[in-house]
Amino acid sequence: MQGLGAVLGSAAVLQETSTSARAALAGVAQPAAVGPYDPAWLPAGVRSRFVQNVNGLTMHVLEAGFDGGDRPALLLLHGFPELAYSWRHVMAPLAEAGYHVIAPDQRGYGRTTGWSADYDGDLRPFSRLNAVRDALALVSAFGYRTVEAVIGHDFGSPIAAWCAVARPDVFRAVALMSAPFGGTPEWPFDTVNGTPPAEPADGPDIYEEMARLPRPRKHYQRYYRTREANGNMWRASQGVHAFLRAYYHHKSADWAENRPFRLAGWTAEDVAQMPTYYIMDLDMGMAETVAREMPTADEIAANRWLPERELRVYSEEYGRNGFQGGLQWYRSGVIADETLTFAGRTIDIPSLFIAGSSDWGAYQRPGSLERMQERACTDMRGVHFVDGAGHWVQQEQPEATVRLLLDFLRAA
Image (spheres, rainbow, N blue to C red):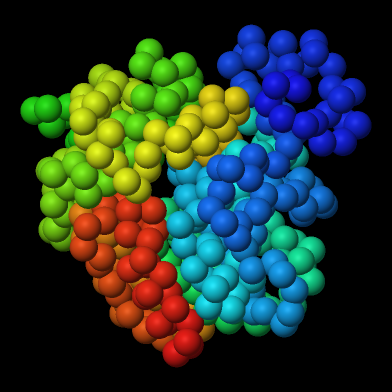
């Protein structure tokens, strides 16, 4: 444990090794309490710290613009398989523009502790609205009643959207990246005097249809909900570092085959046009899927947005914890009863969407991008696709991302 950094708190010191050993034998990482990042890992003006008692968590946070004064706050929420570190390139420029920038390792990730990676454990802590509670508790701990904007990327995007749906009094604006928000659920409407709405006709199950394609396939989100997904990535034969290198490369603009387009519909044939990081071969895990697209040594050496020393931050964190904490978010999607409280509600605060021009994320669920623009967000200020970026837009093209965010914030 000590080799991972300074231990925080007596609870970590008193943790029984037998508990850790049992968890290791079961293939479950114990989220260990470790110290803050080495300052050498971070850009100038960004620091690593911990915040206690955040909705049951001890939350690891990266922070910029912390030098006092009456600064408005920005909350940055990362996705999978990412960390607060994913925002490293944009935090100092946003702070230089006058903001107090707060980026946590979300529940299930990195150096944040107080969550369980038990596959058979309770998934409610990972529900969308509990993630909103995490966000509210964090900004409250920092002494803010309102936040200038909540900004989410990948899986952080729907969490940012639900922050905007549930608490527009706290979050004054919202920026979504890579994952469009298709809207809140709906109850059957105006049925009291009529025939109850018919159940949807039983049609072909798209996931069964994928498995019956000439090249049998499966959806990555369904795969991420399986028991074996964590072990496949955490114990990948190529190692965690090489797995993450291939994963990030495969979904970036560096992979020349990322040329996204709008799909005609939610059918097996249509979605099978997407790359294998979304629609996987049926008999392969994600580790084997991305290994086929491993960049060459020359390509790795030429990478400026994710050099090896920065990738090692990710591989150290995921090597210690595994991936199950992040995968719990995919599995918690089956918890639908909470969000029905907000059925039919729209996002009415100023909204922005940013994605890379080479990012399939905006199109992976046909119709979501259109629903976001036309119905889900009533004050959408812009939809932008950044050239030279794939899925990791704030890492691949940080200057363009910062420029779009600041233009939006100044006008919101």
